[in-house]
Amino acid sequence: MTALRSMLRLCAFAVLGVALAAPGAHAAQRKSSPDKKQHVVGKRPVAKSSVAPRKKVVLRAQPRRVVATSARTPVRMAAPRPSFGKLAGLHDLTDPLDLQSSVALVVDQDTQEVLLSKNDHAVLPIASLTKLMTGLIISQSGLPMDEAITITEEDVDTEKGSSSRLRVGTTLSRREMLHLALMSSENRAAHALGRTYPGGLQTFVAQMNIKARLMGMTDTRYVEPTGLSSQNQSSARDLAVLVNVTHSDPVLREFSTSPGYEVSVGKKTLQYNNTNLLVKNPSWDIGLQKTGYISEAGRCLVMQTQISGRKLIMVFLDSAGKLSRIGDAVRVRNWVESMTGPHSQVPAAQVTKG
Image (cartoon, rainbow, N blue to C red; front, side):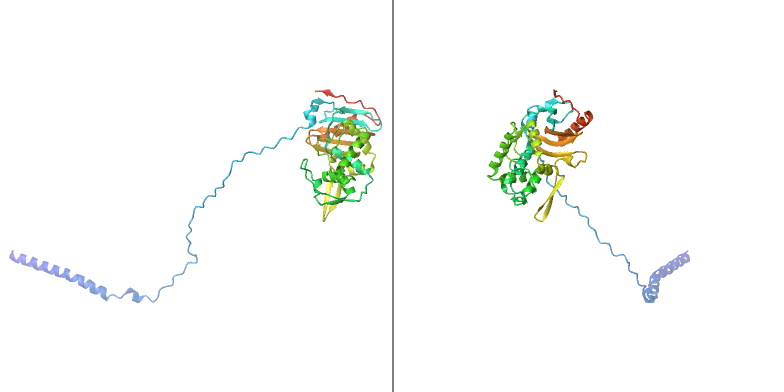
């Protein structure tokens, strides 16, 4: 038993010795092992990336632009003033042709027969129909038509504030001024014609009124040569007389019916057109014409024309729409053509109260 114990002790000491010697042996082995770095001949170069390094993008919130707005009060355009004819109730009358003009008169120029009449004795503003009398005074004055006339501040419209392409300082001949006044209703041209008349504007207007009286135009009164003033007034009966007289003047016939006209102003050439669309219509034979408009007068038109072989004088005053005076002229022509042959009698249209 004692011998067995001694043997076990010897075995335990042997195992313990081996265990203590093992760490040293492993350390010596690691020390004697060659370093891996010493056996590397050279490192392979690392290929650089061809892609550029990404830049750091910083997204910043953009400040909102705030535009201050004010609540505007809607601009209300002033309603156009009613015409004198509208105020007088003349549009309440109806006629067989359903004319849009509150005043109308159609007369046979040769026989003086009245074919159609509607409020023909009403005295109303006549707007630029005034320029027919202006043209008549100038044409019969004997003044040199080639004389130069210059537009001045006096010719600028202060009555209605209308515009004009004839600037202050523009110089044209009296003939050119008359042409523009009759054809395109140039207000500054018409005023300059009166202003440069011998004795001045006041004398010129006096001559207009004297001529009207001599012609039997008892309903007519002029205060200036353009028609911008609502105090220039007449009746359809008187205007038919004026058309008949002015139609006998070749200058007034030519100037009032030419479709267009050019004038040289400095280095510019100004193109003017006729205010009456019908003069460019080949189906109309118009010997003389004039248009007019101010709010107090409405749309106005007078013409000498030939229809179905008859020479007729047409007067339309206080038409409500922009093209309605032209429409009224067309309605009258269609009516005359449908009811007559050459030189046949046309029954007068009767006006009835609506």
